[in-house]
Image 1 (cartoon, rainbow, N blue to C red):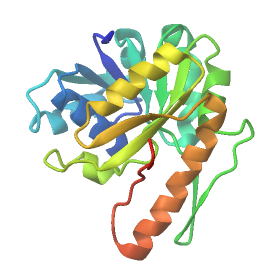
Image 2 (cartoon, rainbow, N blue to C red; image 1 turned 45 degrees about the vertical axis):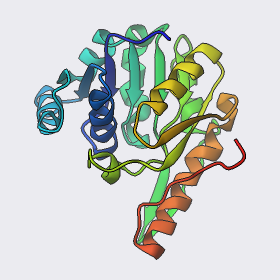
Image 3 (tube, rainbow, N blue to C red; image 1 turned 180 degrees about the horizontal axis):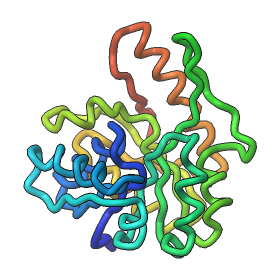
Length: 218
């Protein structure tokens, strides 16, 4: 199986981006954490180096896009378009994994945000027509990812239209201890997975847990 030289994170300074970067660094991948601000990208990389002896560096989103072979888009949904649009050329031909789950937080209530194009992943593919967009990792607890000793008991549903890219992301998911990558079909199905995040967050509130999903029978 092909392995990229560098896994780059766009908007990777939040808990989800840093958590995934940490887990992949622990699995032996070289990671680069990008941010709008160069110093924040470097700071985020330094914050997880204490947990891993892997190759972890940071800088701007532009650096992450140009220096990396595979990209993980981990910015909040409201920043997706303005982050991806200027990077179209750098991201052309590359696998772009979006972990974005559009959500509405209103006075303690959490719900899924309807997206005109059907999902954040489909919108990303529209913004990046020359990239191989995959939707995955939307339902994993960022807090758990940041605790390296904690196994992540979860399935990651991987949706995309490029079979080779999807196979790679399934393999990538399997690198995280306790995680199993599941082929979720085409990118059109990514919206169902994104919406599950709102449900899981509501379950977390009720039971005071970090819930995840498992697919039985597979």
